[in-house]
Image 1: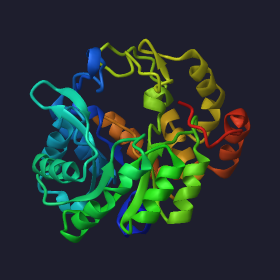
Image 2: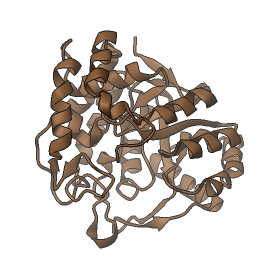
Image 3: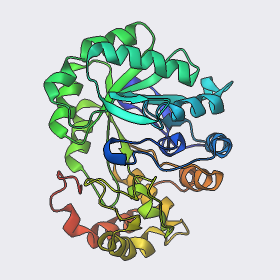
Length: 335
């Protein structure tokens, strides 16, 4: 039986590990040629990857309107055609782009944008509703986010969405949004074995929210891959918040930390990635990691963690001992 979790108080049940669909969107470019995607992608392999996730028991797919300038949603919709009733789809709004040029053009937090962005997402996904609709502006002032609550509640009432949340690492923002929104059921935040955020997890407990974990494999660092990435990959020209990679290579400091915990995470036969995901499942009953994948093999490995379950108690405790210095200020994101 596939391990499942519920998205907060929404009643929406999902596989305990989902698929992050950022990478299957392909390129997106920002100001000055900054890459906001993961480089070129094989769309047919992406479709096979989504199918592999389903075949291994995964039911939760997290995308965003701007991933690949809408391309991720289109590919996800193509892959899920005829299987919509088997899955839970999450998407996000707030970033603007030009589809033709695949360029990011800024942000928009107006309530009317939330509505028009959703309609465009529904067309690309080929569905009449999304299960979870998330504000995608991490550092938006709380007052601006609260201005969206009435509109999001209307979208729930109209059957366009089932629940909503905010992708933010700010615990105060997450708490205020949850307190104001009856159908706010999740917070998506940076969370991995290398970057714990105990304060946001406490907010999830207080407001009965799911903790959707982005970056659960530290942008690939926790897969153990040593493959160099190119200049069209966000890790190749890393923005300041992306600390795991420098000039397309794993940052030495963080590579050393991975080496310290590798044997513990893999002691029961898991791969390194499965160990890192197992740590998240052991961290809290509210966590729902969404590792990205764009090959069938990656999908099988990531979702295969469901059959292994949470990291054993003794292994979890040893990881915490080895990383105790990183836990001293758990409310502060690593980035």
